Length: 283
Ligand code: KIV
Image (tube, rainbow, N blue to C red):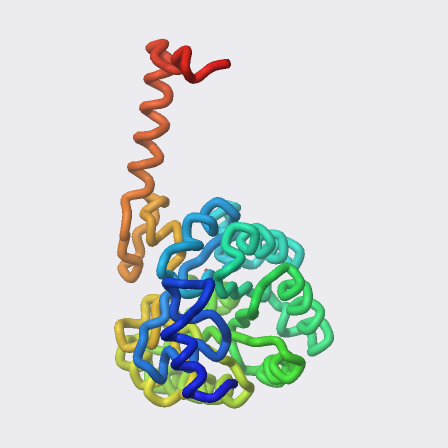
């Protein structure tokens, strides 16, 4: 990490990534130190990344939620390194100036240091600045190895979707004292392993606030309340693109589904009425 003074200067003058607060790993710590909220959103393809490129969103997450959101699967377990690298390359093409984090896929951190290193290397070569790894117990040594190898790692605790079978579904986590204590321990272990930021997903707000105060690295919440150092949403939830999915924590900041449908209806009507294309729209 760089000096705190340098980091704050960087925040004031983010250079080519104007409009964002976080343009490097150091920027995450600096944002927390300066009390500036970090804004992260998922992206999976070039067109949406291009639209997000000049917004004040700090960071794009190429999440393995792509499996559910883009590929229509019921969980994230089908993601592979190659697929995540393909989505990462697409996002980098659309938003080359953004800080981009790519998810390590299911079990990638559980097959030992060498396998994790290969996977992370593939994602970084695809253009990601950092990888995100779910969970802690049993693989903090792998995370430490990656960090010591120069690969920035974002942690992810609480509802870790890659554990969905073991968790018995997508449910709020760490509700009882024992589970909350374990999460506090896991957060401390991840900080010790060297993560530069920590996603907290679907845990009680009070616990998220406590963890945020306890760790030096910034926490980025999703369904974890306002006490986190930043917030992340899945792009399609944030834009209201999936009319059948409305989780309590995911506020819609646009009515994307209605917009898409209206566009399709207008197109169909214009074609059938003979109004489209006009002479000016042909050659
Ligand atoms: O894959 C993903 O989109 C995520 C976010 C929900 C944090 O991990």
